[in-house]
Length: 265
Image (cartoon, rainbow, N blue to C red; front, side, top):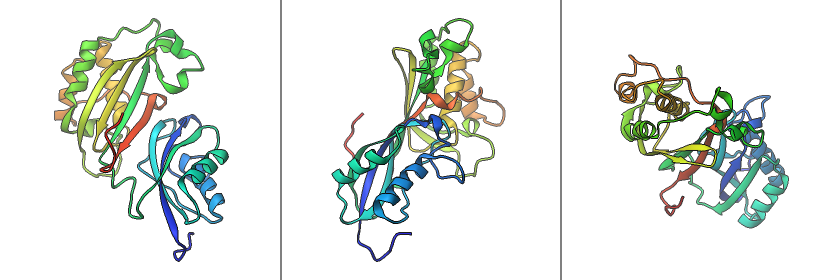
């Protein structure tokens, strides 16, 4: 434990990680996690056990390019030295892209205004390459032929979820009830070199929500479901069933936005 009488400086960390080898962000007994690896290094640098607080959990196999965490360190530590020391000791699949001082009451989870996720779908055969398939849903390498998505239907389905809705149908069963309404500020698909990418920004998410949304939208664009299914699932979650969730390896926590942040992509 940190000595409560010790003078601490608090820092905000922006964390990137390849989630392939992790059992998610949150510390778990006898499992390798991102939080656990970072806390181990921080505690070594501080010469005492320290807790790192994240903006939210990511599941096993999910990646991040903009996870945010906070930690208090002895007052002798500055941001530049702390970042350099962290990156020199952290494993190759975790990288701290920025370290900035924050007030002691900064909380990466409760102070967040919105979170942006990206989901990468690979449509070309190249996505089955070991250099790509760890970071996308390699549809182009798993189907009998390269899939053809109806982009009009895909874009239509994304627009259906923008706004304040009940997303109960798109949540993993059995999760604790915190309410099922979320406000999606943005949901759009864009083309990439390997396929397509979903970018979604919301004030909050339910467990596995982005993956269920992605799986359902892709099925609509492949002609396996009707476009009207998106509205039906939002309006009558107990009467309709989503498609299976898209796999975790295509999902990235891209950005967490706070009141003091400038609007940047």
